[in-house]
Image (cartoon, rainbow, N blue to C red; front, side, top):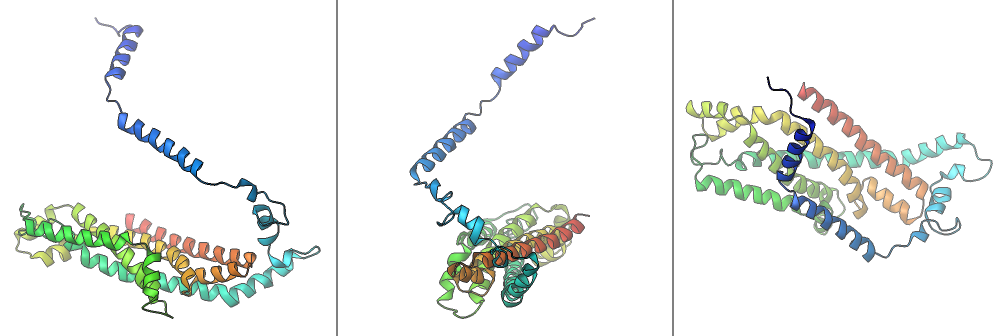
Length: 303
C-alpha cells in the first residue's frame, strides 16, 4: 500500500511546478515602467510644499482651515453656535435651493435625452441584429458595417469631454441652460449607446433565434426578444449615468450656466470660501441622494 510521498519529494515537486509556471514578464515590466514614469513625473513638477504650511497670515492650507473655511458667524471670539443656523438658512434661501434644483433639472433633461439616444442606437450597434440574416447564423458584411459605424459614432460622442462641448455650445446658445443639457446628453448618449448595444449582444440568443424562426423581423427581434431581456441592465446603466450627469452639471456651472458650479465660482472669486464650501456640500448631498435612489432601483431590479 502506497503512503503519502515524503515531505522532501513534495517540496521538490512544488519547486518544479513553480519553475515551469508561465512568467508574467509583461505584467512585471508594466509595473516597473509605471513606477519609473511616476518617479519621473514627480521629479519634473515644481513642488512647493511650503505653500501648504505657510503662516496663518499668508495664503495656504493653514490659513484656509483656520480662517477662510470657518463659517463667518463663528470667526470672532465670543460667537455662538446659535448664529450658524440663520446663516445656513440664508445661504439656502438665496443660493442653495435654486442651485440644487437647476443642477437636478439639467441632469434629468440630459440623462433622458442620452437614454433615448441609447435606446435608438442599441439595435444598430448589435452585430447579429444588423446582419443580413439576423439570428440565423449569418453575419454579412453589411450588418457588420452598420454596427461598426454606430459604435464608432458613439466613440466620437463620448470621446469629447462635456466641458469642451458646453464651452463650444455656449457661443451658439447663450443665456440658457441648453449648452449644459446638450453637452451632457451628447457625451452620455455615446456612452449609453455603446453600453446598451453591448448588453443587447450579451442576452441569450435562443429566444431571439426562436422568434426569428417564427418569422419575426428585425424590429420584432429587438422589441420582443432583446429589449425585454436587457431592460434591467439598461435601467441600471441609466441611473449610473444620471448620477454622473448630476456631478458634471455642477462642474459645467463654472462656465456661467446656472447650477451649483456657477455659485461656487462666484463665491470663489469674492473669496467667500465658507459659503463656497456650503454650496460644495449641497452638490455632494445631491449626488448622494441620487446615488441612494439609484441603489434602491438597482436593488429591486436584482431581486
